[in-house]
Image 1: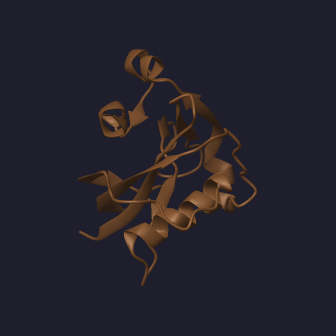
Image 2: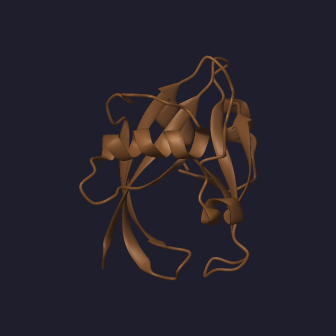
Length: 144
């Protein structure tokens, strides 16, 4: 089984709310599945997790940073990609704190535009009470 490395961002605004994207799959192997997840994506060949985090932050939110600090959490699990391929996902998480809530999605790929419906800044109480599927499941603990 192929290992798919990815960098994920725990983007937190001045009010302590966490940025999540709503993914809704319609025309791929995950059709019918929807969930909320952090910004982030795959580590390209020759890239470190930190470099991927900086790039993904810029591409998915328009936020420019030269550093994302230390990895605050890691997880490994089997997952099905939209292509149908089953991989062993290896994710590293980084916290990025912001002064403002501006999100610029102009850097999204066609795939991101087709599968990401919207974004929302989630409060801790909101995350603890929601019935919606949120990844990672322990996001509140990761952000504390």
